[in-house]
Amino acid sequence: MTTPEILRNLPAIDENMLTWVPFRDGIDASWLYRNGDDGPAAAFLRYRPGARVPLHRHRGYEHIYILRGSQTDKRGTFAAGSFIVNSPGTEHAVLSEDGCLALLIWQIPTEIIGV
Image (cartoon, one colour):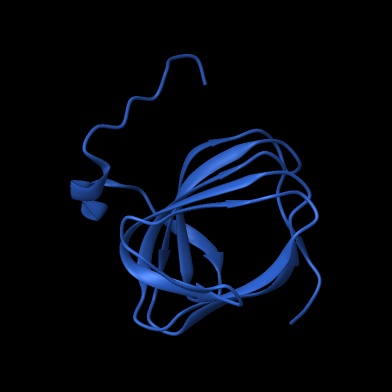
């Protein structure tokens, strides 16, 4: 990235103005930046209702800001406005029963360890 990204009024972001690509089954990504396959990255993730991320391990810090909808893991359900920090070495699976839009920032991509 050669210029800084400035995101204003995140809760009101228009999903239709973003470019989406498949990320995982039922989940699309709109990348803000991505430094190769093993470097830092940030993206909006759009979960369709019922979308899941299998059990995975965080190899670095992951920050999640839920903009719309909710997602659930073993710690509970996190609704819009929630900010979650997953520390290196932690593991969880994620489900979004009703779908959600989230901003994720990865220090290092996660490692999928379950299906």
